[in-house]
Amino acid sequence: MIQSLQNYQDFLLSSYSNLPLGKYVSIVLVRETQGETIFRTEGSGEPLNREFVSAGIDHKEPVQRIIISKRKQTAVERRTGREFLRSYGLLNLNGKECMLNTNEPCERCVDCWVYGYAVGGGGAQKSRVMTEEAFSLLSAGQIVDTKTFNALFDNSTMRHPETGEPSTSLGSSEYVKPESHFIDIETLKDMTEGEFIYVLGNLLNSKRYGAISSKIGRIDNHIVGIVFSHSEIFSTLELTQKTYDLLKTESGELNHPLDTSKVIAKAKEGVAQLLPSVIGRKSQMKGEDLNKLITETSKIYEDPKQFLITLTKSYPGSEEK
Image (cartoon, rainbow, N blue to C red; front, top):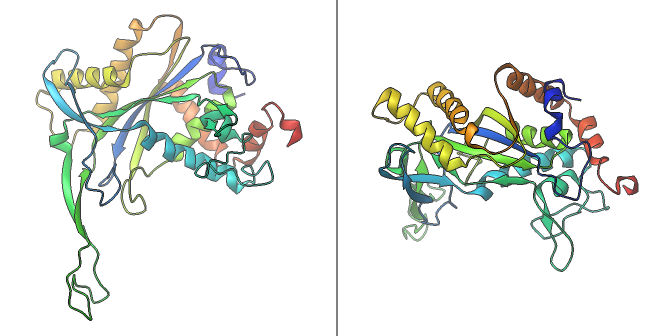
């Protein structure tokens, strides 16, 4: 048992259940870009996703915010977990590699059980990692810029070295500036302790998001708090708006880049103010308990082999593996 989770066992399952039990774990995040980040396919010409929403709960003026889609977030974290599983031979439990992009999930690995799968004409497992769009704290106009890219020939020019014809490989993409902040909540439903640590480990180990992530797209995930509950809590948008209100009240005009420590502090305050509106039993992990959990998780991932093997064997039918 993870020591820091002793007081939260009522919100976690002792073993996997096919039936929903209404136990939720909500991981509250501030995602901070550490470099230029593109959340669209490079060269597609498509702008970043934007939505007009109220700036805050109290500040009602409309503002256009950048959003990170649900899939852009969990796809990265899911791949992180699959890399760990693959490195220990835990993605070929059926004798062949679990392949999601060719619609050939193994239906047995930890990834399939936690993040779900669907087979055309066959079985399916609903994802128990529920996400929303992550909203930028500041407006699109404050955190978005445009970059031009080109593909040079070997002579380091835009003209073909033999024909002299100009290259047509020229385009532009919108990107999010470094030190931009996005508020996000990942909700885990009916998780065992091991599954929770697996998802948390994926979050802590994921560093690059968006397009051309081999070159840009570095993001730090700051865990603001964790809420254990018997119902879903407030939305990502509500927390974004509450955090904006708190920053606005304290600092007045908000300009990029914001102080990350202040953003995290106000996000924590926002959670505390919104939590009483959540119906039903709930318990918030914060402060020293949260620091201990992150430390324990980091320790597990220094050598995660036995942890991942044990988790793999915890599912129905594992004796056949």
